[in-house]
Length: 254
Image 1 (cartoon, helix red, strand yellow):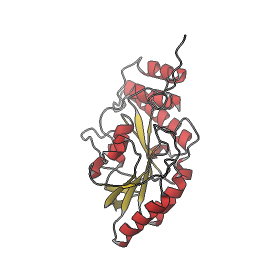
Image 2: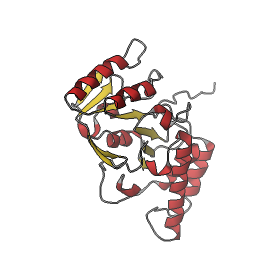
Image 3: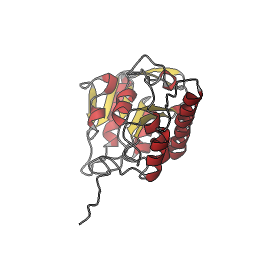
């Protein structure tokens, strides 16, 4: 009997278009930071992929920067100090749902023990009333919250009410991030409609190769402290030579 692969929440079957894009990108030396002909060709591949992802989720291309995957995207996004729309923002507390992925529970630059957890109901949906109470309490103490709630759970598939959560977060001067890796490419996802300030996505959950992910911002002029330094790639937001082939497959899968 032929096996049928169903574990798409762990990793998806690569799309034919993604495999072809990866193979094509590997036919020539490709460092997207190089200024010679081959480097410019590699840069064009990266920028094409950025535009493809922007169309998929309703973002602006310049608001997307590539990473090695969702874990790095989450670790980068969860930062107490950042810039949104050119404005410096400092967050004093990290607030998570009780059902987040381990890469979010690790806390990013906040640290693993920094989080306050919001309960979910019997269906696994975040208690938005409890979240609002926590945020109002911190706002009264002039403490800004960074809130992260996944778009869909990787084990149960439960979808969270992102727009309601975003509205509550913003009413209390907070920053809202969502780990959307289980949603993007499977069901429609629009950055603006979600209300999120920052979104994490990854290639291998939507039919692309492993080894590529992205952080997406709803705001231009967003800066997050780079967790790897020394190269200047991705306009200084994620440094280290881009994996052109993986990014090409990511874009093709989109």
